Image (cartoon, rainbow, N blue to C red; front, side, top):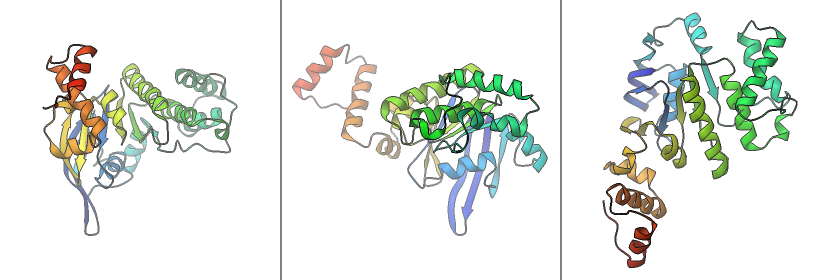
Length: 276
């Protein structure tokens, strides 16, 4: 569990975060969403210590990250996995070498033990026999899976993902979402995801924090978001007419107005106006 209380951050006169408080739950996919400039990236960087908040407190399973000295933070960071937006693989290293990098930096494993561990995590992300490939030989989805393998190779308690579906097609994005979700459940990780992807929000958004102009605007899950009356949230999530219609259909279905596809066809044929 990661808890942050009244986090504030500003750069010069620009207030980026104002009194943001929330709890990221263990064993769940915790999403931070919002438009560009809403403060979600700065918040995530504060959580991992890349930025120091000007005020507020951050706790990792009850331990104050804010008050930790450098050595304690270094030890905690070894329990944190990071999936970067562009995967951030080393082009000159093979898949095996990329995934092994954290083990070489932070573990005392023998080379044989490292290879076994690398093969374990590559198998977990469905990349068996990809050890000797270079990043240039991989598709975008494969690169993301290598990034995930590297992020979990040290058995982290916390996993941070920055726009994990950036640059991927919708089908591959669903595969990556499911993989992150399954790993979160399997290893009981506290997973924190920054995303613009509305498919991710609706598919794996168990605990969602919506940011607006540096403040916490709304929290809930992917079921509650359908029925939210928050106008700013609805404008952000359901910006297109297609998504708005999908939301309306889902609400009618939840209320029992639509029982099956024939009911939906009848509504569309008659041009009935969908309402909340």
